[in-house]
Length: 219
Image (cartoon, rainbow, N blue to C red):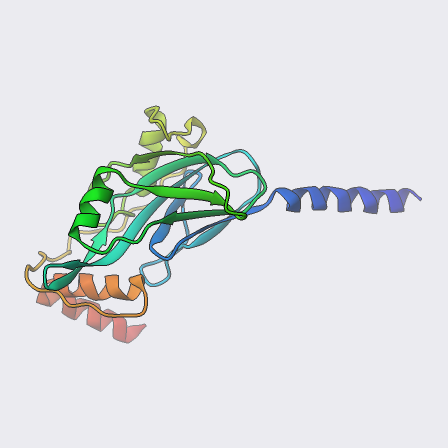
């Protein structure tokens, strides 16, 4: 009898835990850079598009919007500055999205007033606080956790003080990054990750390109 009660109790606890688990996912042009003070999983080739959270407290994510846009007769890669979002997830799944950006006018409007939408799985808009995260360096993810911890310590409108003590990752060395080239860049591909890879390859100097090719052959 006691064993039966124990099994029932454990099942109830597990059911309760699973009930509050929620998945945070994004639209195709939005990438998760950090979740609740920690860097989200993903690489240049496999970007973080979803994560599971296990409670119904306040959550904080950092996202980036990326699009290939028209620029005159050419096309270029637009990558937004990281944007911090704070919201309550509850037990419902969450979808974070941004409207498509097609040209330079769209970029200008977005940079002045970024519109990131947070919705529940059933389409209900969830209130959120949003603010740009100040970043230094060429790549947004370089010092992301450190900058986010500093931001959370500063009391911004999307800050969560409890995430200010997040662990600091070791940054990659950037001393050998080549000087970027200027000129026409042509990209194509089935997804933003592939287009970004092509874009940054064409922006690199010849020596950096060769080092990358040598590295890629070994993978």
